[in-house]
Image (cartoon, rainbow, N blue to C red):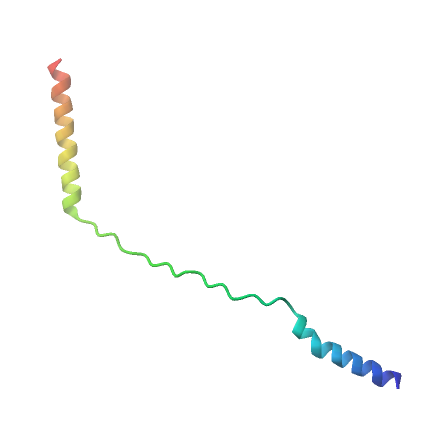
Length: 66
């Protein structure tokens, strides 16, 4: 009789154990990362080169005038 009670107790313990296997928490979804391509234009680079050269020429003229 003791063996049957022990077997029933162990069976009940192992049957209920997965129910207490951890806490329930809502799944956390990471936000999707969307990368936008930067529109590069050669006109912007050409304008920057022109502005830089103009500034260098202007500074050179101001320094040599003194």
